[in-house]
Image (cartoon, rainbow, N blue to C red; front, side, top):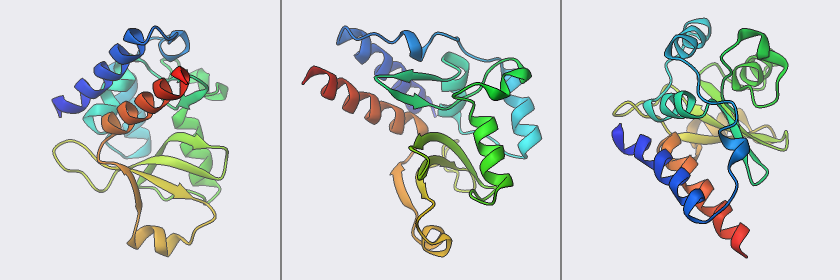
Length: 167
């Protein structure tokens, strides 16, 4: 579990080392354990440790135009961009997202990177691609795994964005 928190810290350090601006990745600051637990209770889920760490450290944010969905401390922030709780609730309500998935990144409305919350191992769960254009049955039997944990997913995406920004 500690490894994934390290991935998030390493990604932030890599942004700083590259001299890139991460103002929008940490402008709101993190959310409290109380807020995280409240959302977990309301949705009947448990977040993996690396996503909890992301929420406590950053809350949510945007880097190089890529938005990482998360939480806001105040419950009234539902309408705000980047609110994973709102996005997940809407997708579930409209029948686009099964109850064991939690959206963490939007791929232009056609697909989402999601925490696969029924597949825990060592306090972590995989991040999978949930594509609205694909059959639910196929995605259930053979999910497209983006990373083994949110920490790994975040780190890999940040590394890619840093690489692209340098070119």
